[in-house]
Image (tube, rainbow, N blue to C red; front, top):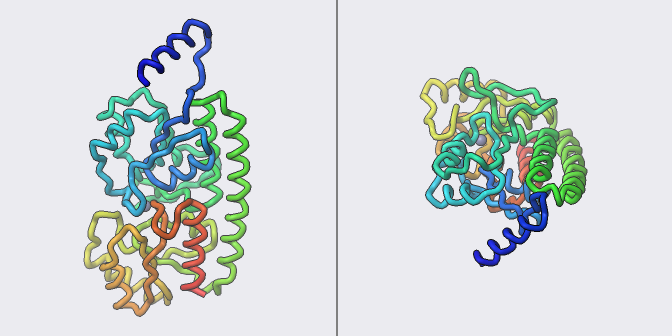
Length: 293
Ligand SMILES: [Zn+2]
């Protein structure tokens, strides 16, 4: 296998002045399963995509293992979000000596995006893809990166990105019409971590609070007490948790406020009930509508 590859490479170098396109699928490594799906939709059979954080995993507190360093070392394209979601990839790249591999940050410096503040002063909330229109900007950036890494298949990437964005347009419209069935006074959201502000802004929902200021950190008693007051004052009907997080704190909030718990929203990771980005958005929307209307 190795000898064959060497022979082919030598042959091409001798006969053709221009560098040739990769023969097999392009190896792409992403930080999360959601981004892996976006790359898969645009890349189709031209890409071999791996996510470092597994499905149901927590990207915020992820620690790369030796196998992840190896995967990064073999990647031809690296895909992360940036904005503090998955900064550990940059350390992994250093450890894998993969500093020459193209790296795209899907959420950074996107034209037409208005960033919302993060939990800590001076930071931005990284969960842009939860607004389907912003996910379409991620798709554009992925298409550009795939064409640059594999120009021979540019037409295929363009066609697949266009078809995918048409489906996302339809998804965006369906979220809007489903949310419209929730009485306006009930369009209030409490989640475990702060993954929904872009979704909320896009689709007309108010975020009353989040159970933890940052994943992996226990909130203080004063923070939780304030949140309980806010939930009661706003008459929030349901508190949503996400499948990758523990439910103890959300259980406490529900017990003290009388709100019901919906324990399986998805945002940062695909999971048992959702195997694509489109399924994440459709599932979450259905859960919200069922609990709030
Ligand atoms: Zn998150």
